Amino acid sequence: MALKTNSQLEKLRLSGIRRFSALAARTPGCVSLTLGEPGEDTPAPVRVEVARDLDRGLTHYPPNNGYPWLREAIARRERARGVPADVADSEGVIVTCGATEALAVALTVVLEPGDEVVIPTPAFSLYESLTTLVRGVPVALDTAPAGFQVSREALEAKVTGRTKAIVLCSPNNPTGCVLDAASLDAVACAAAEHDLFVICDDVYESLVYASSYQRFSARHPELSDRVLVAGSFSKPWAMTGWRLGWLLARPELAAQASKVHQYLVSSVPAFVQHAALRALEWDVRPMRDSYRERRDLTVAALERMGLPLVEPEGAFYAFPSVSALGLGSEEFCERAILEAGVALVPGVFFGAEGYVRLSFACDRETLEEGLARLAGFVGALRAEGGERR
Image (tube, rainbow, N blue to C red; front, side):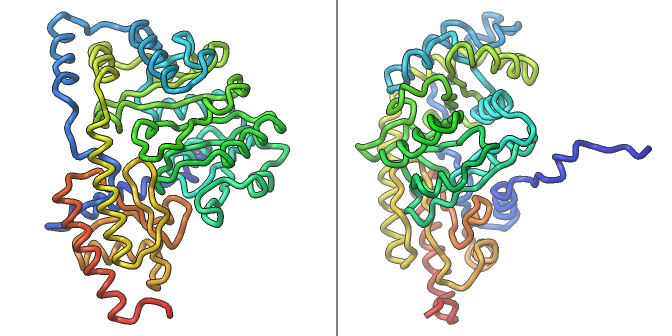
């Protein structure tokens, strides 16, 4: 009998974001605006905590879900940011290896083979891949016709008897859009009427520029029994390489999640948890203000190029349409690298052909150079007659 691997793996593909980032790295002089990677370093007061913990021998097994003092600090922070107390309870906090593990745990907890997960697109491809890996069925909900918002009618059209969960990311990756009250209410109605879980990827909630922002769990505390919230240290505190995040859920749901977490990774390293605690005390407003300035710079440049976009209200991405230029998003991005030395990510990798994602998380000098190159490339495409009239 022939050896066989997990058939679900045949349905997965490696990250397109990483593929274009790697292509940029292999292209001499290329300016990469691909990764959602803060250009800043982790704050020094956070970094020094690791050396202190190593010096005092904090190198043994920690509690599986994280030290109690870190879990309580995360719960306290989340309560202060609107998450209901029965979700943001230290007993319901699991310190994870990034939001990626938190999302993997959440989907593993709620899904059985064949269960469907509604994923509003454009979306980070991780949701589809993780759903597939645990033998669920991803169901894309195209939000582009609604300006990247969730309409109740469109959502109801995607819900079936097999639907088990909805994944939300607000602010969104790749669009930077914030879900409005009507979108959150549409999801709440579906979750209540059809008994659905709501998995909230809130990794960008500290990086919001809109005054009207509200988290799903805060707006709809009556649904706290079915909400799982993923958070991360990566984006707000420039800690992408630390692989630290958290998962929040009501204690009875978290008890099931802790089993998955224990058997996946056991725990996060002991000697990074005081650093995580220190990060929670660090004010991210200066970094957020810097991103806002870069957002404004990016939006203005894209408007001068004539590339339509919905202005991002959070995170550090812009998602302009390039459909009028006559190229598919992959061809557009490949040519941008080879002909102009600037790297973006094709929208098709987020379930949205005709768009490209630009990350303005890098330093201002790099961003300005990348935008200048992109402007030259778009101008050259128009000059060669690529734009549809």
